[in-house]
Image 1: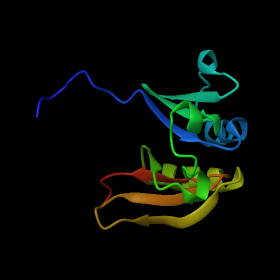
Image 2: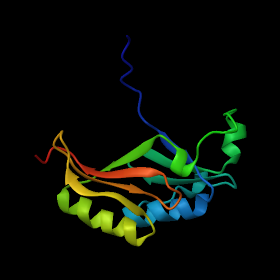
Image 3: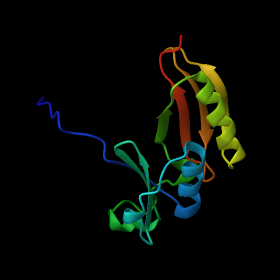
Image 4: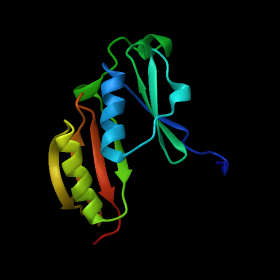
Length: 136
């Protein structure tokens, strides 16, 4: 297999019922700036380092030629992991996410692979983790 050293992750996107509420939730919890130049009727975006967190309306299903039964929210199988600086950040951001309308799935704990993380659902039911690697 050929390596592609210039490949990077530019966008990570989720299809949402309410792109404004979803982008406000993540912007508020993680203090992420909005990429206003990318905003449209069908898309909102936040900057996370060199990656854009994208929030698409359900119109993306047709625009991308996805199956009409593409899962959204609680039914979606993918999840995001937000890496933080230390264990205290996991605790603080978990509390912030719950206060902003997120639902706690699993309180902060040390994983079998030595990370400290919490598992949550955003207001539409999408799963995300807040994680600090290598603490054990």
